[in-house]
Image (cartoon, rainbow, N blue to C red; front, side, top):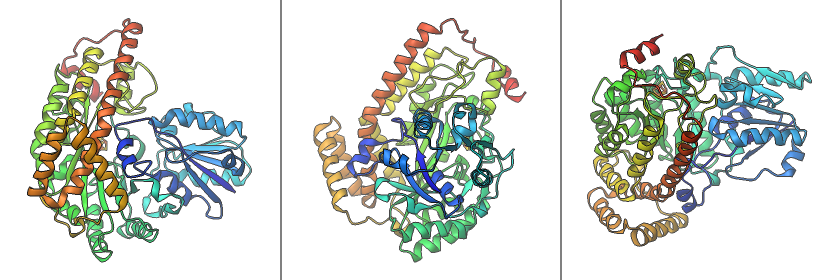
Length: 530
Ligand code: SF4
């Protein structure tokens, strides 16, 4: 069987970083880890051809070659995902679809011949059996059963063109023990984190090493410290593996903020050459955190926790959200102040969206507050439900705060302060690597753009001199973050233009919708609890 593995296009987003990727001749930040895992779960006598539309073209020759297509996507890839289903039909190639989007909204993928939903370890064997019996249609679900990931094979990394990607990705665990009301991770993967074995993860890293990969690796776990015991067991093994292989990789991941309370975990991560962690902070407003059931963010001072993580040697990226129920005016400005106080360079900021099947989605449906059934987690879409304060106030605060956060000078200010706080890298693998020609060229372009052309020129050179003087071993890492200024300069304009256009349309067409008067917090709390 000749199988075409398809990964749809992403729209421009906070994380797409086109400008920075161009500088280093790459096309996408991350590879489609889900699809290469699917390839490993399908019969290995089948032939595979992977087309990631974000890095290469899908040609007529690909369709002619294929006997079957398999596609996986997230909700943000919706537009191209639906287009590719129609393309498969036009080329008379049967197509099976899966991944978070099809699993959350299967009716939107109803034109596909096969729906391989939930986690592939359970549903892919059902799909294979159906194909081998000659079936031409089918919907496969795991009915709430979550697979043990200790049997998941090594992803078929060999199908990827490494030169196209800035980073590789691996997964150690799935699921998260917390219960944030808006989160779809716990709906898709459950609240009992399931981990691979340390040996299993090391075998994946060994495979990447053998294939020649030597750059960053993103551990895509929903919450890397969801199972701290197993996480530490793995890190201890990883530490020896990294030392014996000469520290070939740098890691980054996502974790809950209680990481700050576990010094041993942070030290192990740093010793394994983890250099950044993404934290879901969401908002400094404690009432909103409580309402959204993000209790783990209310136990200690958020600012102190962020500070402790940075000073332990991990650069912090963080997510922020505006639009929680009961939120008071000025939430955008409070987020900007918090980000600047904590010096977080990459603050991913969005308006709250109710993702399908989440606790938030069900509550809002019950309250009759959903504006539309679909959902998008991009920064350029209005909220998909009726909030408790006027949507236009939230949208205006969001645009203003996003604009301030990514003012090029203010971005440089906090990036500089962050790298001073971070201190010198403690892992021997963090040493500065020899620059190749591509990196040299990127460095020259960066210095020209930010040190000569842009109005940031004075700060750019002052801060670079400061880094070389006070924390010289991080200069390459620091400039990598400075390069993202190019992306945000353009992206904040996209956010402003698109949100303002949608807001005008909303005000013109939906003013008939009732904007709920500010609900008293107790009432919202009761609604969440029910
Ligand atoms: S901590 Fe993160 S992954 Fe876990 S439930 Fe909350 S939002 Fe989801």
